[in-house]
Length: 328
Image 1 (cartoon, rainbow, N blue to C red):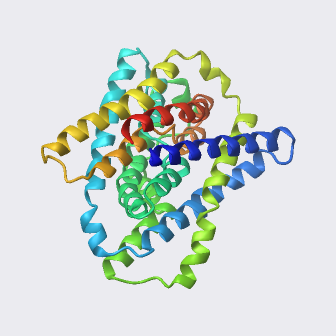
Image 2 (spheres, rainbow, N blue to C red; image 1 turned 45 degrees about the horizontal axis):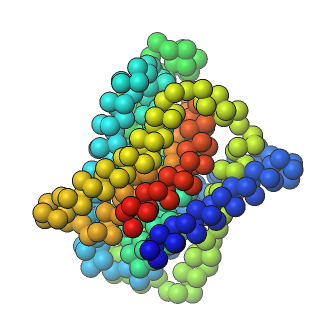
Image 3 (spheres, rainbow, N blue to C red; image 1 turned 180 degrees about the vertical axis):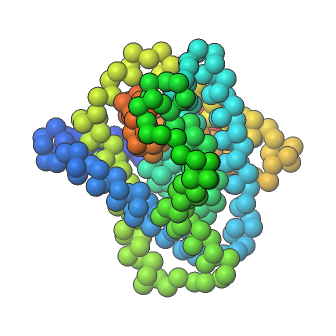
């Protein structure tokens, strides 16, 4: 019950910060340029610092060895999400870019903006290690499968509007360059320090914790501002939105929790109950904001993707409460 109260408190805080962001833009305190700057600051500084500081704060090689099951659970979650929503997209008779972007919005949850602060609050002692280990799998799949899903499908209007397709070598080089991003680099540096047994002094960690602590309020204020600046409401006419939200954010995490709990009971998984709770909550997160950024960069249905980000974020205020009531 105490953990459920923590989740409800987090969700109320999320709602307040969303409303602050929306109100600031509606009152013209700032606009799109400031929102773009906030997004860049979050992705390149605040979230990487948050993960790094929490991961290296007292963690040891023994902690990594004891918690490697989080990586396995993350891989299982993504495999099941990819398979489930590939099938969903076929059953819903979606085609071309719309089918792929729908899959991307359902597979990738907003772990950076919402998942990290939620997990840190629920599991303050182990949450940082779990986030770091989970992020290795998460980032690898996002920058490969996720990027591919957001590319325009050949033969569609979006594909014809995009620039000429580069050679295979350039595509591979571009993919490898995408891994050189602050979040992934921060995770790998943290893991290297832990494996080497390096202790980061408290006088360095304290300002890093302060900087990382800005990630949660700024991310929610940023998302709230998107509501006021984006033509997102067209997605409300898409039938797959409603099927996807219930399937991805309620039914899937509950089914995953039941499956993993059953497997762990028979010793088939090296995972504790808290790990299973954590990955079940991650599975029910709203659409990752980065998906809308990928689609916008290629002109591939950006309003559609942004609509999923915004509507799913609002829906998560209810769905996460429902899932938490069952799994906690």
